[in-house]
Image (cartoon, rainbow, N blue to C red; front, top):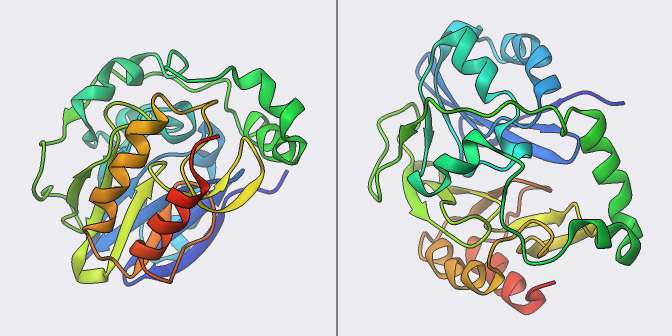
Length: 251
């Protein structure tokens, strides 16, 4: 199976790591890095060489920030906490989920989706091979503030975007004209194998109505580049991505 792939500078000083249809991001500031989302356990094994390719070492990682605590975003957070002793930040609404990353609320049974959307099967199989069923929970997390700027490399502005999970937060980087949307807005839904700006299917979303309302907060950032948790960057502005996601609706 292909391992993690590095896409440098998808926004200024922001590097995308894609593994098994899931994205995590490295945000640099000076000689320090913030990791946003942590993909899968097997992603961790390749992180030293990914960091080396960018001119960094694991000791340059200063923090991990999670947009939410689903297993495919919590992946190597426990390893980073244990081996690097860096703080892991998360909204308090997802603290319980971080301890039990498979015990999440969803609107529809996930097992129906391979039958309804066979195009999603390759993504789901790739996620399984990457370690989706072996993610360790994390209980030692630092709580994200309700709003404002987080004092980690990149100094992201927090954008509360509940719906996919009840504690989901996006991260706005205004100086880099980018917003990291996590799964509040994606350009690939792995459950359906469908590309384009959208919210994630009910197989993994707690409340699609709430998720659609949360798109207003993303649009308000005015960011030029959307960096999602799944799929390619969207470079036509967050307002157009939000419009497309609203048009796609729930599924």
